[in-house]
Image 1 (cartoon, rainbow, N blue to C red):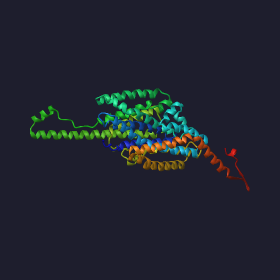
Image 2: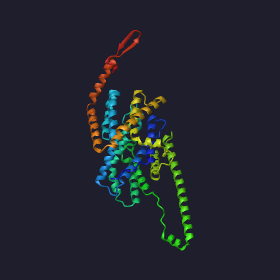
Image 3: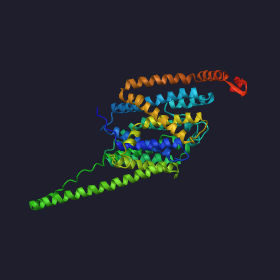
Length: 436
């Protein structure tokens, strides 16, 4: 089996930029109004990753497809189900009974990576949920549903396109599929275009196009033609050396010039991308998604080093390394905290700093324990672990009402023992009806 290639640090930095923008958006949606487009960055990067992995093989076999799914399983599922279980238990212990029971419906759909399908089925608008008085712990799980559902068909789309022998035909095929998906994205209603995997195919396809372009963008030295060889043979030896030296100098100069121009262009794209993601001005959700996706695809296709502004940052690349754990953890932390303070916004800097610190702690814990462990271990230990977690979650889901009643009864008993001093020297206890 082939050794997996080393991670491109520029792509890890792009992941870091994406997750930072999403985190900022969820902290203060009213300020960082374009931060949600970080998810679109992830979709393009995933499309590139899928095509790059599958393109290692001249011809896809059942074994290759099986290994692809096994690796995706190890990368995604163990940490996902761990966070899901932690949120499920925490919701039962922290939320009011009615909120905890309502949350279980979302857990059931997320159980099968289908949170986005639930949104479409119930015609739930993402933006209305984000500003609701009680926000679901799993609002962010829709994007994982979209990715997993695309993974199910991606190897077969790639195998079909690989039947085309030339890179040009493959790119044209990706463009055709991408265009059809984009049209569906533009004409669908707000809920469908946001959550439907087919409406998001065009972004994954942009990543695949970037993979094809990057695979054929390695510049080789221009071969000496027969005409040039004949001309050189007619020259004296000294002139031959002078002509060859002049040709080499011109090639070096042209290469240096093209590198400078290329790096300047890519740096400009990175600056525009970052400024738009954190900008308080928006051109609209759909136009913004198209612009951001095209910029990311261009960066992926033309940049295979980390010599570009921000993409050369080790800190940003490290954030990219932990971006999956950070994505899973940050939203539940925000929801639990805002639920505790009975506010949908983090209005004070103290609240923001507290949420950021708690999120970082949970992210690092999840990354260095579950995520690292699942990537290091084989498929069987990961599958057994996931099976155990799914079994526990199924038991909790089946007994949600019973567990909620037990928690509620404990709260009643605890509060009924509390004495409140109403007037000096006079205390009273709350009855169960008053507590309810």
